[in-house]
Image (cartoon, rainbow, N blue to C red; front, side, top):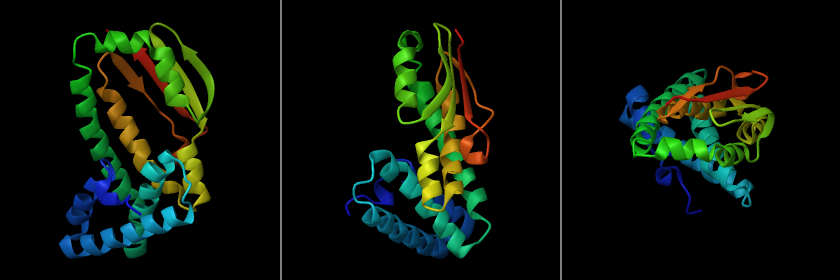
Length: 195
């Protein structure tokens, strides 16, 4: 398949995380193992949707690779990477939303943004007004797929990214205190206008 971890904007940086944690030689071995796992996942489900191929399969492959070589370290290493990547994305979103008028435009179109954010997710308690957007995600397709694949903890890496990068949007005060992937009953998104 043409899709591999090196081509992923998000996950290609994980190699550096492996080097920092395990040294160059072991990082290479772990990366190759993860690439192999990624290909197996894709081959087993050639018609998998884009979110599964772009996020779930890479997260599961990387998690499984660490677990293979260093049992009990996968969750800590993947969550740490998720936080670092989330902080990098936060900076990108902070820069993009610094453009004049972008925060105002975002809030003007928040109903459409909320619909896009919740597409494919089971949502309860959705509330969108001119100055707030609240939703409880009670079922996450990313988590559900990782659970189906037997590696549900892999998705916590993505939750850690989300928790950081969502704070990069100017004009938005973001809070999330719970996560389905971390065993909670929902992901409680609370966005409030902050200008």
